[in-house]
Image (cartoon, rainbow, N blue to C red; front, side, top):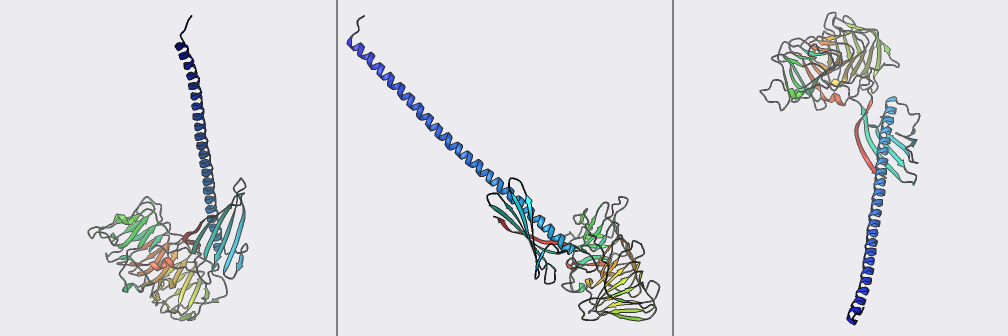
Length: 455
């Protein structure tokens, strides 16, 4: 078969072009594959880097968590030591106590330690301050530290105006001039201040049969808090705050169901003291030394003052009564006068009854007169025309105020009852800052902050 020269030339040209086109396509595919592999390598490298970084951040976050947990554990250990006053495991230098706790393991070679420091550990030169550092160390030596600092003070006891530990609070006054309010004795006398709205009536009773805070005619400037049922109000009773509308008689925003009243042990008074026989019908007795810095301790089997008997307290004293504490309950106008230079703490194992001319606290500062009762009987009460400036703490016994007494301070009892025509309670806010030596109040965190964060 004959083909022309032109035809053969066309066939030859077509073959060369086909071979070149195939080579170009293979090169392009290879280049694309290389580009894809490069992109994949970069993406994979980035992914591995992100995973590594995520793991590193996660590990560091876990270290931070372990560190703060260790610091908090250290805080608990320091508070336990302060409350137990056991420094056998601590190093003491001046007024600073230090301690290290090691041996914590979190797996994978990660270890932990706690370093503690308490300045003013004995409280002699100021408020104890705890510094707790939790440290977590990885096998590569990297360490993360978290440090917490707190000021520690004795927990407040008298946080309410009237508190029934497991019972009820009843204000059954016959007159609407019965008042519950607050003031601050650190500022001055009640009469020189505008009454505040921070008085709290708290009842810890779990009874559902009747209201556990009962207000008849009482004019309450503050709050009412009950655990179960209550409160109840007569038609003349009020509960108000500073912003309560004048037309509102009972401000329900000032009632809660979360009463709080701590119960701490009453300390047993020990140490050298003087055995006394208090005056009965008409005698007098002077206790304490004006200007003394250490309280004088007095022991007696009972106090039963009648007639015109009088005890004058002119310095700091602690009186331990192993029997009943009666002032005028059996007649007469006996009295206890606590001079402005004196303070009085009375620990009573028996009944408490304050009648006659009662207890006259000349300083008018409630924290300077404290009466503690450990009994569980129901007789304790007060019926006197003398205003009482002080605190009464009888958490397992009832306490009843029968007369038109004005109480400046706070009362804590199993059940608290105010009767009479117009008794009043003026709660001293400064009691929330006070520590009473006769009560075993524990140390608590009063201020908490983190001072460092990181390695």
